[in-house]
Length: 304
Image (cartoon, rainbow, N blue to C red; front, top):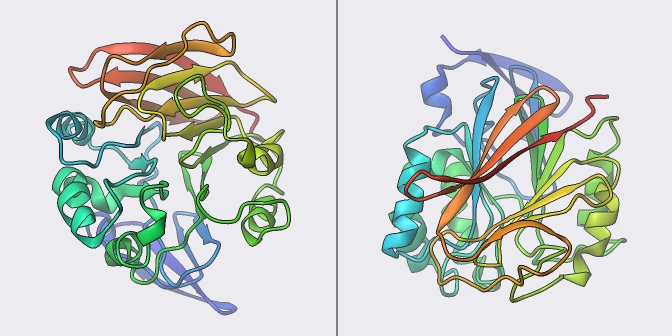
């Protein structure tokens, strides 16, 4: 028998036991889901993404820009699936236009084995058609309209999925929701969205993301993005380490390796970021499709 699941409904709680195996494919329409004391909170939308397994340490992968049906994208997905991760943070973009057919063929066709452990964020290729692609696809997992931004927890880390493709200005509903999520002390938070605030590659810095970055200062230790079809580790800024993992299978973008903000970059391999999360620490590794570790490091956080 698995952990009790407590579903928040208005002011009361109901409890029912459910095997862990059954949990993996279940979506919930409640306002919050608590599994073994871990809450899932969303901005809006009727559905909720299932809470990841709470292994300690937990293995979480992150990658974007790979759901295009290519052989390279499939190789990245196979590498991730082979490690049976607690969660996959998909950093956006299902090509070309995020249609229902592309989610069926390019996401389910490549990452279908990982769908029930995926925590997604929409990319710029997805959001224009989200009402016919992203939303109905993920509603099969969430049990209702998927929230455009939401938060959950894994191994003592709060995981926050933000949406760079909808309003994220200082007075927006998303920014207001984010500030509420950041009220608790500590910096053991990982935030992810599609377009990076800082980048040494083709698209460059996304200056419009500044309100999100500013809100996370002093409250998060790690940020993950896609959009750039390469891999980058940026120097720590405002207490935050930014990792870009957009080498999921789409054609690669050149990185300006001379950019002084870079710790490391790679624009020749396809791969993803593997995170090993434990209390107060996240080990990360950029891993190529063949299994080679290209760059590794540790991000530490304050628990309170």
